[in-house]
Image (cartoon, rainbow over all chains, first blue to last red; front, side, top):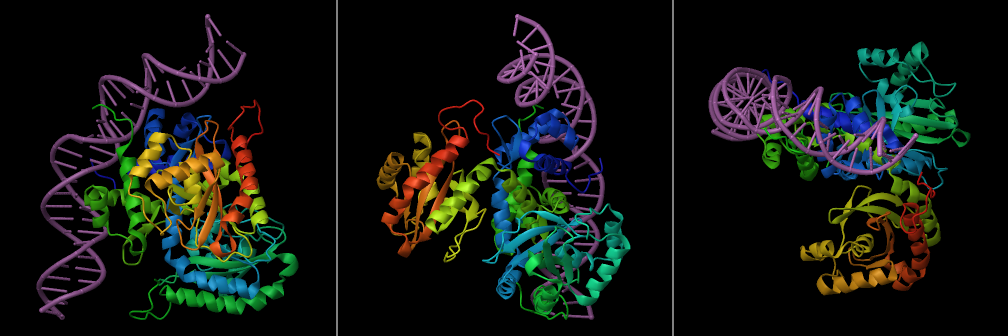
Length: 262
Length: 262
DNA sequence: CTTCGCATTCGAGTTACTCGAATCTATTTT
DNA sequence: AAAATAGATTCGAGTAACTCGAATGCGAAG
């Protein structure tokens, strides 16, 4: 009767939510949901009943399950409260002014980067991107900036995975390892059409008080008007911003009563 | 040992998430969380352990609980999949072209409207608004457009609540009831600085196949450059769009094999 | 009309949750 | 520097609430 240290009900409920999320546009039936989450149909039904009432899930006219609006409300709240986002905002706006291009803010989750903010330039040929979307660590500017600062075992773990070759320029293996060393020296990362053809980015890491990379931001633009040289020209000022943001989060010389975020 | 029809664990877990959400910027301690959710501290701790692992919650450096990035990922997924949003998008973009002002899309949740999309005009004096935010039904253009089409008992229910007087122009009681009748005749709603001083909006309802208002969109602009007359001039074209969107969602003459959303 | 798939209900069995108290840890006070 | 305080975490007993498979209900398809 040893009590575990976490709640299996909660785990399974979110397993169900994840399953619905992965199902995508077509939705998913109760039976499929139960199979995917590894519980009996009746159990899934019970959870789903609660989740529907909470509007974490919805049902479409065909009776299939979809994600619900509660998630939007919670996400909106998260964005309002997020310290990193609040600290970074003014810098991102300034960087958009400076570069005239779109700037993103992201945080690492697992072996991916999740976009949590975007500031668009007026002239932007709309690059597809949306808050909440995820991108790999190994082939994006934000991802590589973060990856370079992770501890060696974690880096090895990521390198050992199957790394998607998104474009002909995507780096893997020793090339990627060398790139990460370069990034550590430079302090910033360049994505030279490694994630998407025709898109070039500069990415900077943000560290917390423990020195861990807790986020990153990047400037993205069509390769045609954003050369490698442009990237290098922009980098020093962006790096100064990254350092500033990290300091505000407590990284570096530990100052008692340092300016608190918010 | 009668099995209930829903899962109390799931309910309580989301009670905890809601408590964290309401706590806002300051975060919330485990003890406060337990009290707010009505469970023992150790129970709350167990749930929280799972929620942290799932990154539905996070802890700040002070040890207080905050919302986590998983919510952003799920919300992003929801936005990608949402049928209403997909159908409405091109219309909203056209409406921005037409009006030169900011357009919002929302859905009713409880007695509020939740913003699920926003298309901004280039010239916009940035009106504060964000996806995931909520607004009351009684004093916004989207809210009144939806409210007018709800069934009478529900309308009474909303009218009977304490309706916040957001500005001197906010309508309540019989004035609001008369306004709703007008909105039903016109097909659209005008928010004449009833929610926020200096902001005027036109709102249109979107109906599903059962005729229920499942969403709304609105054009918002500073009152100085968006007169009541402007609202009325814009309304017919916006109304045509609203009707179109509703039809695509199945409202009105049921056409077999009608053009499917997505 | 029959068949099929899926949603929902039901009841037995037992896992996994709930609670209060004890312990540990970090921060604040004297 | 030591003590006091507040909160986080662990622990163990007891049982409420969950899990499962089978039976039933419902609607769509053949």
